[in-house]
Image (tube, rainbow, N blue to C red; front, top):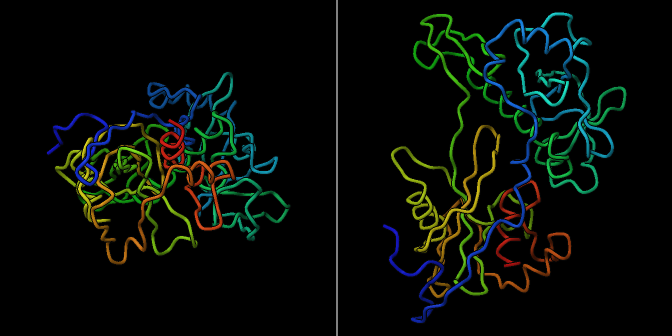
Length: 336
């Protein structure tokens, strides 16, 4: 149940402290998009054929990497007609921008690992083709791309991941065919239609109503990397109830004053991150979930501001990368 306390207030050591509301510092990186999505085009074979002939294709491999150029700041799509004169059944329409259409195809091209480009947020190595073309993943270069490219790459990864995990009918187990230019599938056995699935997850910045924010880290993360808390929404659960449950499960504290901030697609493999803020008492003991949270602690605003001014990190504090909505949540709170 949500608290009846005034919005933005929390009892801290018996004293109520009121914080000013804050917003995301900027639109989340992967929420940016400019290409037009037209559902009617996906169901018009003649129009799809015309779009293919004037289209450009993003390739995405099994690791979610695509060819890039200019140090990872731009995508490197290829003319659709370089792949086939006629639209392939497996081609998925991403959208239209001006006089061009954009498509995605899965790739199994042989690649060799290379370091991530400067400015990328990722510990995942990129790759290079035999002719020296650079391939990088969305986590790494999403924040380096412009609005159009970020939206196209995010959509491409989401569609590729969905089809890779939904090759058989959930009802009868028969293989499925892609329809609607990749935006639906149809069972070859029972005829059941299915559409790209998105799994909701909440992500919440917990503060004390004053100058402290609660940050935590998972055991698999690099040393000193911290972020806000997140978790998947369960069946029959509201978003607000999920926030309360996840924070309690992950660090053992009760939150109040839950407030929505914004959202961001997170196609790893098919999620959407729904951002919230909430308040908690820093005097309450933190109990990190065994095996899930390695460490959690309260961090003063001054240290967060210092880290942000230093590219998002200090020797003992690495903030979330700019590809994640978590970075805009932390920056918004720190700069309010």
